[in-house]
Structures are given as structure tokens and as C-alpha cells.
Length: 125
Image (cartoon, rainbow, N blue to C red; front, side):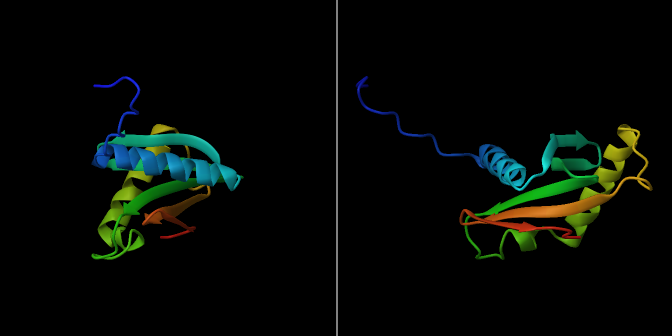
């Protein structure tokens, strides 16, 4: 291999794509004034892509990417079942952090990427 030739970038696998778009979403939201709290929170109930804070509100963010809209856009991929799973996971997060959900304002947002076009839906569900 010639040392002077630039290396061809490796194609992103599914996991790397997810991490890439989550980082893009985090940067975008921080530019909008939100503060980063946590990324990729895992528990038995599921995973939260991003947890951000906007003033006194805790914002749970689902990040979705679709290269093609052949089977619906990225936004439509957050089904009612997925929404329930995110809510359960968020509830578990609040309990694990000893945050009283009755006294903490929370919101569920979606940041979606369709063909690299970013959309932010506040209070998505």
C-alpha cells in the first residue's frame, strides 16, 4: 500500500451510524441551548439515546435516522410501542436518580434524520 495515498473511509455499520447521528443530534440540541445530561442510558426496560435539560425540564430524546423514506420517514419509525418503551425507561431513569417524577417537568422529543435532513419534534409524545 502506498503511504502517500489517503485511506478510504470505512463504511459506517449500524452501530456506528447510530452513534454518529446521536452525536449530531447532541451538537444540534446544544446549539439550541439545551444542556447535555447523559447519552445511551441503558437499563432492563430499554435505552434512552440522549437526556438533555432545557431550563427546568428534563428532555428525553429519541434519535432516528433513515437513508430512504421507502418504508416511511425516520419520524414515523417511533411507533406507539417504541414510545411506551421509552416512557418506561425514562420512568426507571428518574427512579434510579431519585428524581420525583411528580415534581420534575419532563418532555419527550424526537430528532430525526431523513437523508441527512435534520428535524426536531418537541413534545413528540
